[in-house]
Length: 387
Ligand SMILES: Cc1cc2nc3c(=O)[nH]c(=O)nc-3n(C[C@H](O)[C@H](O)[C@H](O)COP(=O)(O)OP(=O)(O)OC[C@H]3O[C@@H](n4cnc5c(N)ncnc54)[C@H](O)[C@@H]3O)c2cc1C
Image (tube, rainbow, N blue to C red; front, side, top):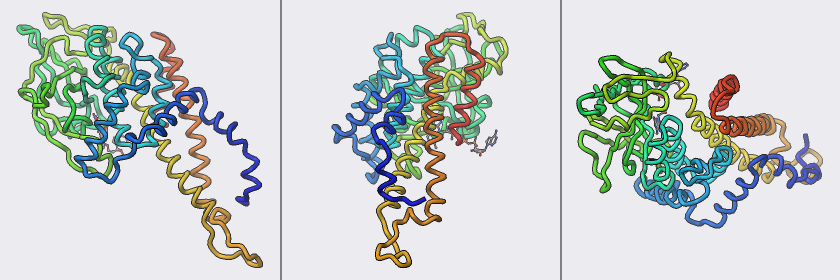
């Protein structure tokens, strides 16, 4: 293939962009406009860790007042309830700064998402609006030092006390501390904690409880120990941290109880009898988080390839035999073989991502049913995340 200007001129750029922008083209344009008109959205990369974290926190707070935040949340909580638009806006923001992306992803997608998907109306009314506006900075405390991928084996416990109608959240040892949790080291005030629920002496598997970790002045709550993960290889605008709970008491309704609830006397009930099925149903509802990761990775790849391809089309090295012109890098076959398969894969992944987002959007308007489609989507989303 010859990378000549004649061939490039044959591409109808507007048409190609319209195909690539897809169903949520208007959202993509809104994000482009916001980024262009907002000097405060510049990347904090290169700043010290403290300054970078402060910049990202400020950017996240400003973004929480925009449509980008509202798209994630249901209309009943002041949002716009458009998960397709939300994931598209998220994918576009990855072009600005990945730390900012993770910060808002933790706040809206993970913390807000777990309340929305595993909570019940009382949780939605109490917390969703504050999660959206960031008046309640939150964390998603799933991973432990000893268990990351294997969430079903986390060892934090939430033991119900029927005398006081409270759960006692406890970290049995350092292996069970919550680790690498975004928003913990500095800003988070509440954590959605994944723990083994125990009531009437019986373990009922992993459930999620909302546990306050800092007071309004930013001081750790009694019984909560917080440690900063410090500087990382990347994403230093995100304040990742560790959490320990020393018999921390929370009220009975701190349990996000869509799939499993505990009556005042300690009786457990769930609409899904089988514990493993219940666990995977609960995790399945958090699929948007998975899809958002593949979207963000895709944007980072597109950015890298844009730089590489543009450079390859601009730089010239060595004269071709019998020519007085130097050869552009992308006319070398070896250079094409390095870049073009990756470029083609990225186009394929772009359309795969659009398809997965569209399916999620369509399924999200159905409150029940379509079980087979949901399982297929979960498999596709998992595959896309590792692709
Ligand atoms: C920057 C950053 C931010 C994070 N933020 C959060 C957060 O906000 N909240 C949170 O809860 N967690 C967070 N995490 C933790 C993250 O989600 C975990 O790192 C992730 O779940 C993987 O767990 P692990 O690191 O313990 O890896 P492990 O589970 O130990 O897996 C390591 C590797 O082992 C192999 N492996 C493991 N199991 C299998 C298997 N069944 N089959 C084949 N191979 C396997 C794979 O190669 C895998 O990549 C964050 C991590 C980072 C780095």
